Image 1 (cartoon, rainbow, N blue to C red):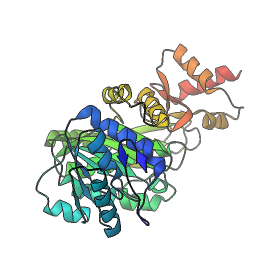
Image 2 (cartoon, rainbow, N blue to C red; image 1 turned 180 degrees about the vertical axis):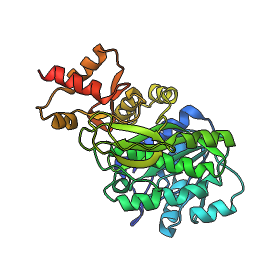
Image 3 (tube, rainbow, N blue to C red; image 1 turned 60 degrees about the vertical axis):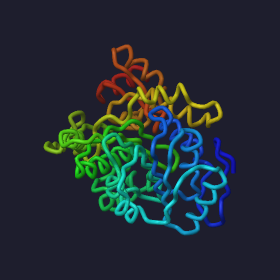
Length: 357
């Protein structure tokens, strides 16, 4: 298989997903714009494709971990095939973290299923300024199809509605922030992606008790009205269960991350330097995330027209009405038929009523 500057062979029984090439393009670009000759831990290497591309395309110095013996042998084979200077360990993440005495600039975690069991140990090989690149493919759990598993794994009640993908990202970030605080790290999300079957967050760690406290203060709960689709956020210390728009009982979700999901200055660099050889779909995804307002959650136009019992309306027409009222309007990269910005549900409903007449 040829991908980027890497050429790999995939052994029988070793997992490799060619459809994730675009996400790997994004990850290479992320390291490229932030560092030169960085130390990178590929904590779940499989074929080794990610770490090998970091070495060849981002001038990084990778170390590989793979617990499965066959996959570990595949990683070593591909390291030699690409003639890179790297070490691979046939260990679990827990074993590695217990025996390794240094810390990394970047840590890439892309496990099968939940990333929750590995975050604590990876924080043991982190330092001030380390950047975590964490993938979760247990999207059914984070998106509320298996709510009990989300409570068990992430200590959070998930949403199972039109907001589930963004809330899944926020629950994952909450879990990282909560765990990082135990090591006196605060977190700074620099890119958050919910796409296809995965969620992936790119997070900078900032050491210090005050940074940890500031991150924890950005976590809290979200109330959602299943009738009119309104939502509101609450800190960990305040709870109110009535919708302030329609008066219905609101359901409580979380705790989750209530702060920013990205850092546009970094995204701008990634986009401007994105290789023409990389996935056009990946670039389009980055652009949509860059353009997305950093307000919490969004309003789904179809859900609101259903609540209002009216026919479908143009998303762009609603956005135009909101812009006429002076609001900043964008859309969520998780729901293209949405409006997101510095407005409330009443403003959106008024705009929908205007364009539907």
